[in-house]
Structures are given as structure tokens and as C-alpha cells.
Image: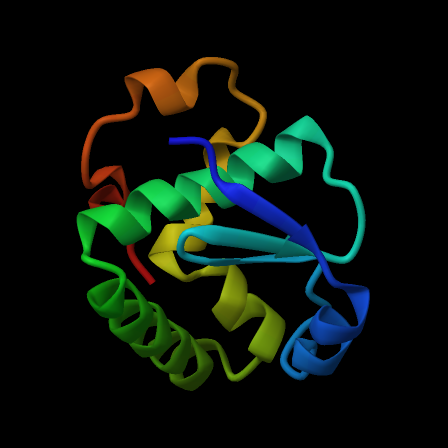
Length: 113
């Protein structure tokens, strides 16, 4: 399934409370400030796969838990964001051609906050 992309710069500016958001995945949509590069689109599409694995709701609960755990551990918003397991996987493979076609299910489990 190809994700549905929406360009909404005002919405993302309003959501950029924790860190500056260029794009966000809200299953089944990817909302971005501007036209996305292939790398950013792949990063966000990895989040689509993760959300499907966790029936969307559990993705957001675990995402929030990881962020809070990182915030307590690192005491820095940006560091906490980059330590979220889902972000670690998406950043690690956003430049790898063919990753989405060959991605092991639940690959985010190998990462720790």
C-alpha cells in the first residue's frame, strides 16, 4: 500500500512543540511541510509499516512511552526523540534502497531507548 501524502505546512508548524517537524505519519497519511525527498518518504513509510504491526494505537502508546523514558533518561527533548525505537529504525534505513520490500517484521524491537 502506498501511503497517502498531504502537504500542510501550517499544521506541522503548529505541531512542532517538541522538535521541528518536517513530516509526520498519522496512519494511513503522511503529512509534510513540503514535497518530500525519497529518503524522507521512506523514513515515514517505515513508520506506516510499524503502525500496521501494532494496530496503530499500540504504536502511539509505545512511541509515547519510549519518548517519556528517553526524556527521563537523557533529560533532553531532542535526544529522547532520536532514541525512540521506531525513530532509530526509520533513521537507520531511510537511505537503504529496497528496505521496505525486505524489512523484517518488528525490526524495531532490536533497538533500545
